[in-house]
Image (cartoon, rainbow, N blue to C red):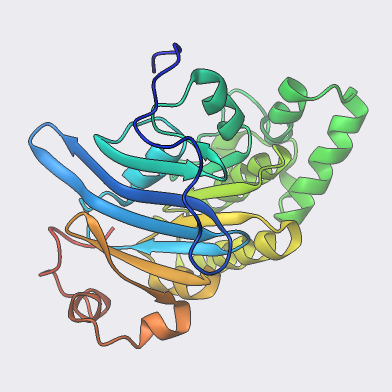
Length: 271
């Protein structure tokens, strides 16, 4: 992204939140990749302190939303707000400030293979704080204990299962002290027991740290366990959004089709 200042195409203050305080907002967002139009005027509002789940068929731009929020992608049109900062067309300094508040749990876990579990988790503390080595080690122990991985402190990533890697990656995210956590398919490829464990961890992290989270998933049990509200994205827009309980019983035809395993909504199988 060009580090030079960009002239904003809209007012430099965030639009007012509707209802409870919104920490994250997308307003009329469009995004295309070549001839494929992924987002078509999408509107989204995530309240401070909630876990917001995004469901929808594959190819509807769910993971694209996360990249827009951290400025890895720019929308073709529309606005992206994190707190009072407008992310799209932002100066590089603003992007670094926003990214410093956000933790990103990748589907692949993205652990550094040549570092131990402890070194992976301690990396944000070593790079962004002035803590002494023994203080970093104590913090690493605390975060690993929270995700039930302290016993694996000196193992290498290659020695861990997929679920263990996700838990270590979450400990590393927590070490960065984020106020927002983005989860991109955190239970993909995991068995039902580990899926339930990860979903419970997401809920526990929200309660203990008060973070605001966006969870992109295809896994319905994870969505029901971890989410406060759920949005269904189809045709490049949010077509339905409600509390988790109400969402499960909605009469919206596209949502009912998706929940029952149908394929007519969007394109391809759910992911």
